[in-house]
Length: 313
Ligand code: ZN
Image 1 (cartoon, rainbow, N blue to C red):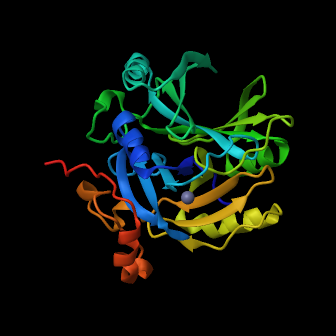
Image 2: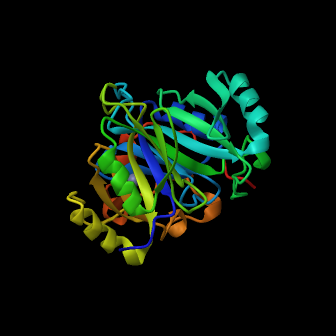
């Protein structure tokens, strides 16, 4: 078996208006646009990546913003909530900030000893800030949120499942072990510092999720280059049907839909977002995989304009 997975690599969700999505994640939440590209399966749509200063695996929240996307329905068979980690002394800063930015929020309340603030992005995607004394210092971006209060990356995700057993068993294989539970929530924990939590909510009566704006498309986990093929075989052994290894330019990926209906990705940490842009220039220009470069003019002319912050001096 390959070594245990330390945590989440990235989470990809569907949005509607790309400009509104950009403003919320960079200005309200203070993340950095670390890659501005297109959906490699539909080049009329952006693929926007937000993260810490250098786009460290475990920090990057990515979106396919379809301007005319219908709202989806958050429900079973999906990752339903994205959890970000903040330092434990930053709770008041964030409740004040969300309030002054006009973002309705619930909490702070306590879950498993942590302080949690819950809110939604402009498309209704459920988000949480989880305050932890062990939040890593990380590599905060320059931006509207002071470094001491910056979002450090993922704490975890919440999966909503009609039946939890198959996905729970897969998570254990991956290195996420069951820890605490309360009500319908079973927490699984891996050993890494970012994205090491998967909470599973089992509810056979809950409505089934429908893809659309404000829903998660897939959750990607970090794997090493040398063990990715072993993960492919391990997924086949479990009766899943993983894709072959796909080169996504900034990482290589395999995808497999879990028994519970959630799409998982197993993505390599390398080469990373700085393979084609200097760290100081991440996100400033549209970057395309080489096989799309000869269509750049056509692709750029079909994309809506996006405000990109001027380069920091
Ligand atoms: Zn992905």
